[in-house]
Image (tube, rainbow, N blue to C red; front, top):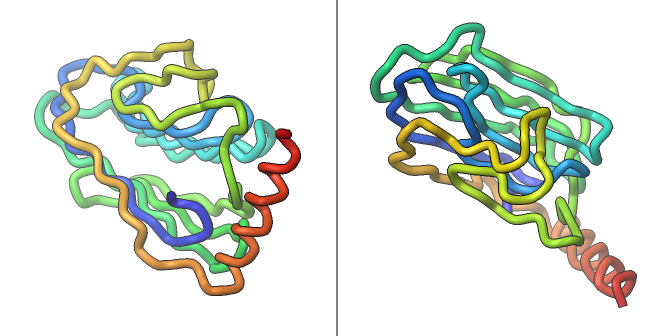
Length: 167
């Protein structure tokens, strides 16, 4: 769960001339995706299908081993925004402000966390089942901070209301 906190996603990949989803969570109405677009590492944060924030490398990766990382420094708070940075092989290559984030769930309809493809509705502007042609050595998701007691309370209340609404 990377909601309401600071986090980091790190992918170790080996590329040639590649495309496809490295890892993603959610779908077309909310979520995030780390993918290769014509060899260019790209991160997309999708806030309810309306606010799309892209961080993309200006150029395709050279063939070989690479570490692609996205770090989000949260402002703190329930659904709070923050600063996102895309890094390739230790060099920051793209930066964006995400004004608000999804505080509870990316989907109530079964969207999943995927590695190597996007099995549900696409998070981003790519085709369904956008399989990664690069070799994915590993993907690590890390929470860099824990939500405050007030945020955890808001999460619990929100999840309870969401559960009731699906009855």
